[in-house]
Image (cartoon, rainbow, N blue to C red):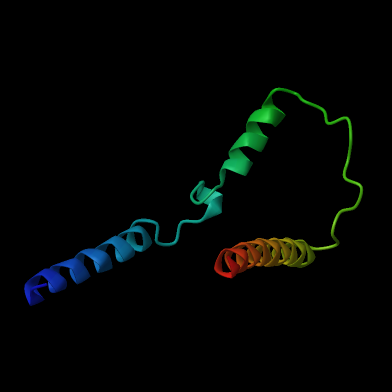
Length: 95
């Protein structure tokens, strides 16, 4: 690639990276930015008057513990998937 093409691509990447930070500078969840679809769906369900008929069996004592359990669950899933792919690839090489 030409040097000018690389410079233009670098500038475009920087603009794409910086633009959202400049547009939403200082605005957070209180203003409605960066709210997830879970929040929006929860609000819609609550607006219908739905009453849950079952509660949680156990709730983590803090948000940090909840994040830890989520990360642990993701790690265990990644290990299982990695093992399955490794086993599959090893079987292919064996033949």
